[in-house]
Amino acid sequence: MTTRPAGLPDHIQHYIDGQRVDSIDGDRFDVLEPVGNEVYTTAARGKAADVDAAVAAATRAFETGPWPSMKPRQRARILNRIADIVESRDAELAAFESFDSGLPITQAKGQAQRAAENFRFFADLIVAQRDDTYKVPGSQMNYVNRKPKGVAGLITPWNTPFMLESWKLAPALASGCTVVLKPAEFTPLSASLWAGIFEEAELPQGVFNLVNGIGEEAGDALVKHPGVPLISFTGESRTGQLIFANCAPHLKAMSMELGGKSPAVVFADADLDAAIDSTLFGVFSLNGERCTAGSRILVERPIYEEFLERYAARAERIVVGDPSDPATEVGALVHPEHFDKVMSYVEIGKQEGRLLAGGGRPEAFPEGNFVAPTVFADVAPDARIFQEEIFGPVVAITPFDTDEEALELANGVRYGLAAYIWTSDLVRAHTFAQSVEAGMVWLNSHNVRDLRSPFGGVKASGLGHEGGYRSLDFYSDQQAVHITL
Ligand code: NAD
Image 1 (tube, protein in one colour):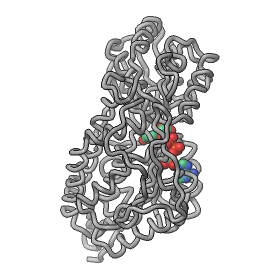
Image 2: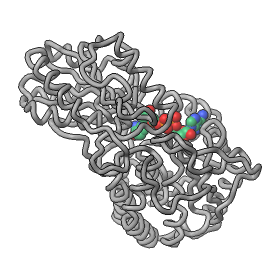
Image 3: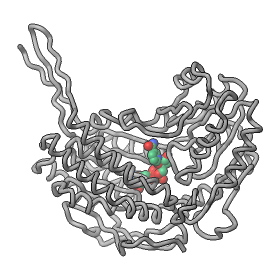
Image 4: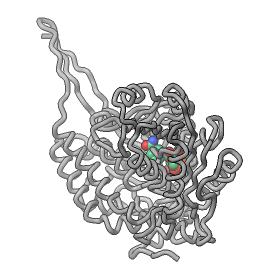
C-alpha cells in the first residue's frame, strides 16, 4: 500500500465553459494507481459530443470574449497569477503526481515550479514582444500583424503530465488562443487541478476547457474537429503519425513532440565520474519515462570495461521503492499496460545483450509496476532494444572504436530527439554536436532546459520546434500588411 494523498477526488469531470460536467452519455473510465493497480477514482469518458461542446465554448470565448484582444500586459498579469497559484500548490501537486503516475516523490517535487516558470516565461515574452516592420524607401512599408490562431487543441502524455500540459497551455494562452486540453487517460488527476487554478487567477470563462477520455475517442474527435485549426501533440511517434494523417484533410497547423532513443556518447577522454553520474540520471530518473532519456550509451573501447563495471554497480544500488517514500529513486511505472511493454523489452534484451544489472521485477515488489534498473551491454545496433523506445528504466550499452563509428551508431535509429556527448576535446565535441541527428545536444552536461532555446526533435522525434518565440509563433498567425507610401 502506498500513501494516499489527502483530497483525492471520487470522480474527475470535464471542464467546459467554466462548468465541471460529466460526459453527455454519462460514460466514465477507471483510473488506477500504479503501486497496487487499484482503481482509486473514475474520470468522465469524453466522446465527440463532449469535444463539440468544449470547442463551442472555446470558440465563443475566442470570438466574443476579452481574451484574444487583451493587451499583452493584462494577459501577462493573469498568467503571472496562474504561476503564483501553481507554485503555491507544489506539495499538493507533487503528492498527486507521484500517487497517480508512480514518479518518486522527490522528483515530483519541483514539477509545479517548472510549470509556474513556463507561465512566467511566456508572460514576460508577450510583454517584451517585438514584431517586424520593413520600409522600402519611396514605395511602401510593411508591418507584421500578429493574431492568435483560434481554438488550440492540446493533447498531452502521461509522463510528468502537469508540467507538460503547462508547456502547451502557457504559450497558447499567452498568444491569445483559447484551448481544449485532452490529457492522458492514464494520469488525469493533476490535470483536474487546472480548472480551480484558472478560476482563482480569473482567466475569463470558456478560455480553458478540458475533456478527459481515451485517445482514440476524445483525442481523435479533437484532432478531427473542423473548429480547431491547430493541434499541439506530445506523445508516441506512432500516434503522431496517425494524428498527422487526421490533420491533413483540414490542413491543420501541427506541433509534434514525439518519442526518442537518444544516445549518450562517452569518449575515452571524458570526465568519467561526471559521465557515469549523468548517464545514470539520464535513463533512470523519472523512472526512465522521459522523452529525452539517454537510453543508448555508446562508450569508446579503451574505457568500455571500466565503464560497464562502474555503471552496473551503481545501477544495482539505485533504490526502487514506493513512490511516496523520499528514499525512492525509481518508483512504479505508470500503468500495468506500460509495465508489460517494458518487461517484454527486458525479456527481448536478455536475447540481444549481456545483462549486467536488473532484468525484471525486484523481489521485494511482487505486485505493482516495479522494474529494477536494467543494464544490457554489448548491444548490437540492429537489436530491438537499441532501435526501439522502451520508455522505462532500461539501458543498452554499445562499444565503439572511432569517432566515425560513434556518429554512425548515434544516428543509426529512426529517432532524433536528444544527444549527450562526453569528451574533454572541445573540437571533437562541437564537430560531433553539429553532425549528430538530434534536435537538442548536451555537451558534458545534464538535460537542463533553457526556455528560450529550441525544443523539439528531428526525424521520427517531432515536427516543428517550440521554445521561446517559436512557441508563440506556432499559436499565432503573422499577417503581412503592406502600405504604399
Ligand atoms: P501516446 O501517444 O500513447 O498518447 C499521448 C496522448 O495522445 C494521450 O493523451 C492519448 O490519449 C492521445 N492519443 C492517443 N491516440 C490518439 C489518437 N488516435 N488521436 C488523438 N489523440 C490520441 O503517448 P504516451 O504513451 O502517453 O506518452 C509517451 C510518449 O510520449 C513517448 O513516446 C515519449 O517519448 C513521448 N514524449 C515526447 C516528449 C517530447 O517532448 N518529444 C515529451 C514527453 C513524452
